[in-house]
Each structure stands twice: as C-alpha cells, then as structure tokens.
Image (cartoon, rainbow, N blue to C red; front, side):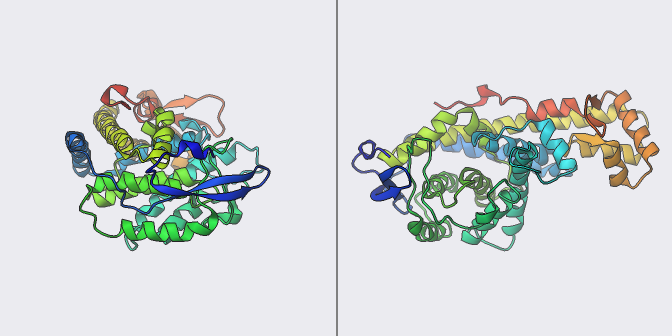
Length: 391
C-alpha cells in the first residue's frame, strides 16, 4: 500500500506489517467513529429528499396486503447486484431455478457454487431480520450473517462466522491493506459501542453510511466483507428509520457506479473525504428509492393485469399468480408440492397461465420451467438512471 497517498489529517494511522511473498508493507487502522467531520449545511436539502423518497417507499409497502409480494423481487435483485460487485455473476433465471431446488456444488468449478453464493445472500438478509427481533446490531449478529453467507461456499467453510486471523489486502496490487488481524476484535468492539449509542451530530441515515465505511475499512473477515457490509446496511436503514420492512437496497447503485464506490471509500481512508462519500450515498438513496417506487407501482399494476387475464380463476389459480411475484418461475413438480395436488392437475393449472400469456416455457430446462417474463422485466430490468446519478 502506497503510504504517500495518505495525506495529513487522514482518519487513522498506518502501521508496518510483513506480507507473505511481498515483504514489508503498511496497514491502515481507522480511527473510531464518530469522525472529526461536520455534516455540511448544503447537504440538508439532499438529506431531506432522501428521507422523503424513503418515506414514500415505506408508505407504499405498508398499504399492501402482503408486502413480501413486492419485497421479495427487490431482495433477489439486491443479492444478484451485491454479488456482481464481488465478481460473482448469476442471471436472475439461474438463481430462481436454483432456489426451487437448492443443492451443493460438486466441485470448485461447478457453476452451482456461484448460484449457492448468491442464494446465501438472500438467506443472510432474512436471517438478519430474524436476529434483529432479539438482538441489537452487534458482533454476534455480524458473525452469524457471515456464517449464513459463506455456508457451502467453495473452500471457505473453515473460517465462516469467524473473524480473520490473517492479514488481507484489497486489490491485486494491495491498493488498500486493512488492519492487522490482532486489531480486528477491538476495532469491531468500538464500532459496536458506537452503533448502539446515541449520536446527535448525525442523522440516522447518515450514520448508516458512516458505519458502512468503517465496517469495510476494518474488513473483519477473510472473505465476504462487502456482502456482509451491504446486508448490514439494509438492516440498519430499516431499523433506524423505522421502516416496516427493509425497503432500501443500495447494491444496484453501487454496482452501477462501482469505480466511484471503491474510490470514495478509499478517499476517506487516505484523506478524510467524508463529504464526497456521504453525498454519493444520499444521491444513491434517492435513486434507489425512486427506482423501487417505480417498480412497486409496476408490480401492483401487473398483479391486477394478470388476474384480469384469467376467466373465473379458482382460489388455487389466484394463489399461483400471487406467488409469481415472490418467485416468478414454476415447474410442474413445484406446483404439485406447493398445493399437494396430482401432476396432471398441476399441469392443467400451469397450462392455463401459459394460455393467458402469464407464463412462458423456458427452452432446454429440465424439469420444464415456466417464467413470468413480464414480472422478470420489472424486477430485474436496468435501474432508471434518470432517477439519480453519482455526481
């Protein structure tokens, strides 16, 4: 790590270390939160807009008879985007088919390993929501998130759910070197204290992004830090802003502006540029909230449209259509299992939705898989970049 890039006043200290194969280097130890930085008055309108957009999004969620019908596609999109940032690429179709019948990879090169990795992100998010019912945001919760995230992931089970005992570096050339392993426990302990105490200097939303930086700078695990940090971010914003569900997911925005995301985090460490990071995140909040609001409106309209396409739907057909908004793919065996019905009966139900142009068969898949393509387009189509940008 180039120590010359760290200017006077950077929020931490550099310590000498020895890296395998590389020899002497420097590691960065961040100063404990809160930062020696004041929220600028010119950011107040941006913060107000972000809070307003989040309030609108949460309000839409509270009016739904079953919020999970719209929440689930947003969470699946978050899992795919967050993993893409780390270089694991899975299509929505692949992930949805895997979710119908999850399995363990047979080798490190098995593509199932990628599917499992992204699938685990969604599991970690749901597990975190359950933990928050009885736990504060703490080291135990963070370890459990990591344990779920890394379960069955190739070659990493040995350290899942455990803070690292080795030195790591970020980037192939070691552009950033996090704290030595002996510092991790205390740094996280100090972060836990800050998370669970009042700080009247900063709005809760701003605090979420301060903490996200701190977590990534500490980099407490051998692997999976980015994904754990983004799960934690979704949980914090939901809890601290009093949302009925975690509606804000930032990974698609961070993926769209990946270079800026990485650079702004590094700029805090190297020169204390908190303002650029917070402005970036507030603009991202507005963009993601507005994008989710748009998708929610489209989901609602599509639900009504789908039901209108089927003449005299039975209660089972109604439930089948509703379920597509949670998981927009079915197989005939999955319908059999869900409703405890015979194969032929399930086949008739699926073919009825195919005739109504609600489902379309995906060629070359066994067992035969049927996707709700219109839901897929709403759920996984590109972010509306006009709703926000990185500058």
